[in-house]
Length: 259
Image (cartoon, rainbow, N blue to C red):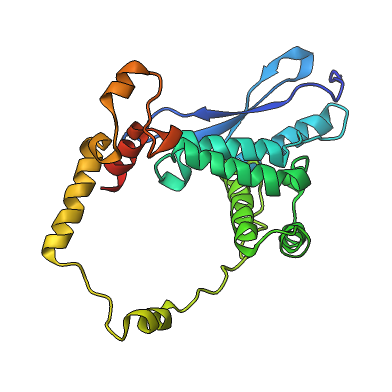
């Protein structure tokens, strides 16, 4: 007779990197770990997280209790999203600068987490996404651009959770906040400067722009008013009055990327 184990038994899912293929690339599998009959450890593996979740539910039912998925809150997903942006980079992009991460965090903390922080995102539906979008537009009291950015980061959090198997349905697809209609600045330009069209920079002007950009990439301190005497007196302050606490080194890093 099979041994019955309390339904509170631990059934965990672990993501595992498989052995490299012939071309050097790697694939991943999902291992369901639990103790079966007579306490023998079981570790079946599956190609997808969905298959592993299904196995987990099967094991929980077999050993005497309802299958219970762990709650994964929006706050946890947002924390993971910010770490991905800073350390890994989203969708194959480069990681973003810490100041940009802070702006993402501020947007989420001020406009999204107070309302959705404790929500279990595994149970989200398309109507839930639309309801939050409508709340942002109608009841949040925020400007259109703030609403749009908040919704972009909201969807970004869900997308990263989906990419990592925390959400199985792409319920936010096609739901968006459109950008406010841009002002036609052609007439404003014509009114102020006449009918002359905008001019493409000459080769000389383009060369000057490139020279400045190159200087910022190689050593931006002279162009930023960086004072070596102040730096020597206060070595812990790696910034100049023109840039504030971001620091000349971050300016240099940015121009290495964008030159």
